[in-house]
Image (cartoon, rainbow, N blue to C red; front, side, top):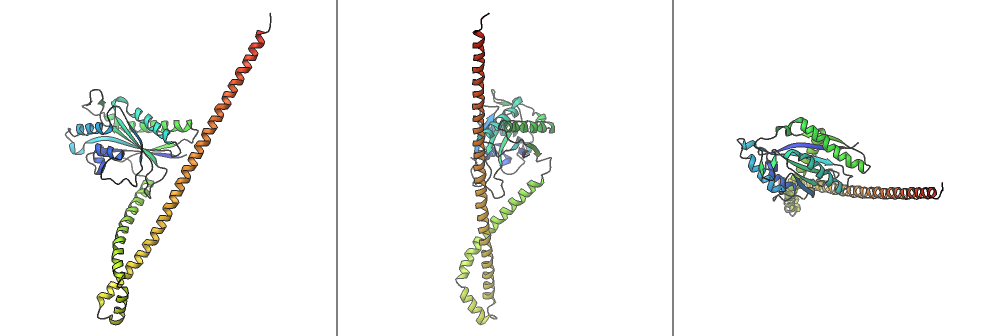
Length: 336
């Protein structure tokens, strides 16, 4: 049985980066925040908001301003976030329906919930099956008609019991759609940043991301070295002759030549690593294409089976009606 990951974390003034602002984080999730390179990030497939008629940006601006009026402005909590992994074999339309159902359930009792459905990221360490959705939940009850927040936060929203209940609800909605499509059900994992330890899989993912960053940094160094290598290459023969003829008197040239040879070996190793990386990337893209094609073919077969089953049921119903009609006609022809 597959496992879908559900992660809970806070959006707070005390955090660095985009999560230090509900407004900026909302923009980041809908891919409109400026100054961000989204080339390796999954695209926004769909989004929405429950609990208010306002747009997400308008609402989160109000929520952020309200929390900054409290005494603890430096540590103000603007929102709660749930990150929900979705089964990759579901159609996008079904994923959107699940997000809408979850947000409606979470927005009960005056809570506002905005959601953002993303396709998998394109980073090397990312799983191409990782379709997921972000849910931002308000920290206070909100009267959408009057446009005002409750004076006191609902502390029950952040209890462990509430999180466990939401976990069951989310898993139930997902499994409900999987059963409707006759797909295997899943189990849910819930994790909260500030209280529950990070599992081994996440550590591996972080290590892969760190290695990816180191590789990019090394690539920049190699490019700089390549420039220097080209300059040294023009004098390679002159340096070699000078070293052979006067190695004792020109240690500077010997050092330059040694540096050139070192850079040349490093650049060759980099080229080989780059070719391997490109081949691996092509292989991953081919696997992703095949998986998507298999998913489409499976859904087409499933739809054909549904149509055939519906046609059989219709024919059986028509046959049953005809039989009943014959019986009724038979009875009507009998005299007493």
